Image (cartoon, rainbow, N blue to C red; front, side):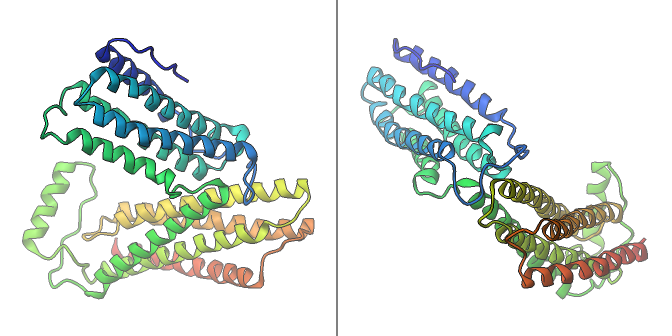
Length: 377
């Protein structure tokens, strides 16, 4: 972690702190929060090391929130005292950086979403502080009627309040559930958008085949021509079956994400240390696969806008079917593992019933989507 600069000339102090915070931001940016640790340390009960990290995160946010107010007020009164106020700000940023480094360490056992939420919140605060300092260093906040400095301080407060108002999920369970619920909401929003398009029925003008090309200029020209020739905001009669089949895949994706969340909740219970580790490993697997399904929905939705580009849509449909299959296969393996090891905590009958329905629906929806695409080509 960077050292707090010595206070000297106010301008030099600002330059030193900008350099220190830029170095901190670079370190945070490089943290690999895109993967899960080899082993999770917890699900419901947060270990002391993780609790202490969240405590440091809160302390840092409190210091920055208060000191940024002082820093802004002193900006137009006393440059030397304003420079001194920066010491507390940089110390607060370093506390938050330390907390983020600990949470992102493999030994801490925090899941991928836990790391990501912490890193995102910490970087947001540090970046807002950098922007606030820059307006004073660049002399953009001078003048009695200039409120740019106050605006930048307001942004710092806003980013700090994500932590101070407890809007940042803490621990593996809260972060995993937050992400899965967001993916389910994204599915619902995508479903509503494309259901409206489908309900409009086929467009009155049939479009020529949309060229699949990597040439952006040609694609733009084609879209402009289509806009002149006919309605590009609705599907043609030939495109409707493909859009409908793709929509069913998104509905299926939402059900699979919901199923994974139910499985995660149900397999955690009172268990021996060895059983606890096994269950945590399953949770990590289920989250990673459900994450792939959620991300896939966004990509699939992006390829469903009319006019359809068949090869691009086919690629996304195939990918989505693959990630759904991977998740369902993992849950099937989990059921077999539970049977083989006599887990004290088993999946409920409702969850098993939902799994069976989704497994059957997947075979049907996969076939429908591929058949519809083949008919369009």
